[in-house]
Image (tube, rainbow, N blue to C red; front, side, top):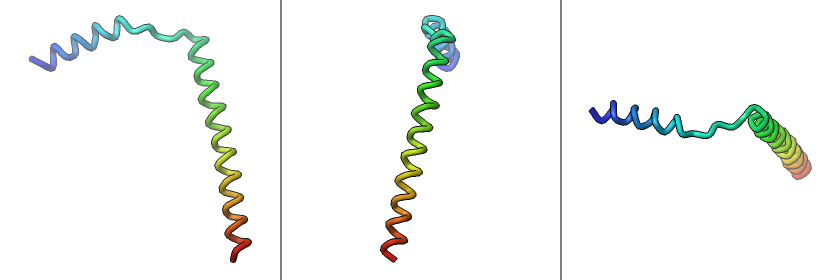
Length: 58
């Protein structure tokens, strides 16, 4: 009985959700992709520096 009531309340809540539009979704997706690329470049540079430092020490 609790499971049926749970799903009914989930359905009611989902009807009240304000979903973002296409423009907002594209903007958010572009932001996530851009930041992911920046982080990957940052970590690649840090990895390269650490590898260079370790080779220099040995």
